[in-house]
Image 1 (tube, rainbow, N blue to C red):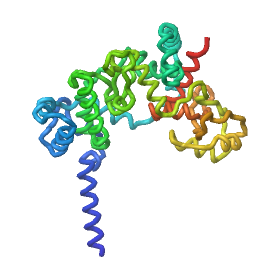
Image 2 (image 1 turned 180 degrees about the vertical axis):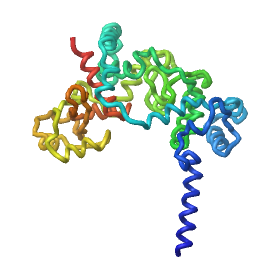
Image 3 (image 1 turned 90 degrees about the vertical axis):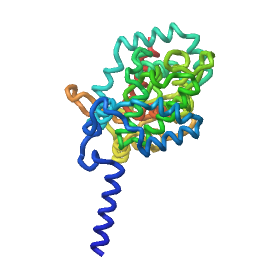
Image 4 (image 1 turned 30 degrees about the vertical axis):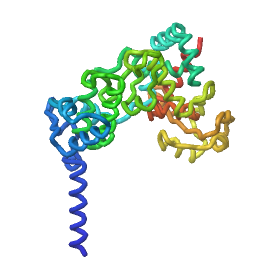
Length: 346
């Protein structure tokens, strides 16, 4: 019995090692296992299967082998991916990156300059213009910083050399080639973020294929060069995840929670959920009911230790949760909300 258990344990560990590779076993980071510009071997089972799946979607094998030839690892992509699992930035350090006088000034200028376009966007998608602009500002500084990493190389680097999320980036690579095919883009020249998001809206390829729209009427869905396509795609994304025009995004709950249950909720991350009535009852505060029903979330935000520290808490409404589908970070959604409010004020 002991020998059998030992054998099963050895087989299990071998399976784990095979799936996650030397990085898992040795505790090394993905970037530690490669060198920059290391050739990517496409004569492997994982690439053969990828090509087979792409052929089923209409791609030709010879064209794929030519496209994927001479690919190399971008080690910086792996280093940045490894680094994201480190200590998160607290709210008091995160907020000043986006809530600046210059960003607020520029955002208001864009709202005035393109008022007719925003009138149309609000009518067509039911999403507040200030929130669209806030996301545009936070993602790419109004389209000015869309990333300088070669998309095709980054996605292949992450598929080939980042075991932890290889399957995810395989799917994104397929979506990327599909969107390039449909819109006559050259997949070898598009640039984006190190993690594969691109364009003024910083969509991942899968999000592009689901939510990006042609809003300028030129027949091409282009969130890279078309401001209208990018803004409409942001609006369409939020609309898809339940945004309701002119309803609350978040409401301040103060610096203290009055219930252990709320403290527990606050520690559960972006997906915590509590009913509106229950939150009112436990926090002993009057809150407006969600217009279309739905639950609220409890959002903790770290305050600057040099200014007293502690936390402040928000009640996140369904609109807040819609922003979190764009980016799961509670800090991101809180910053979008606060920036949008700053853009609304005179």
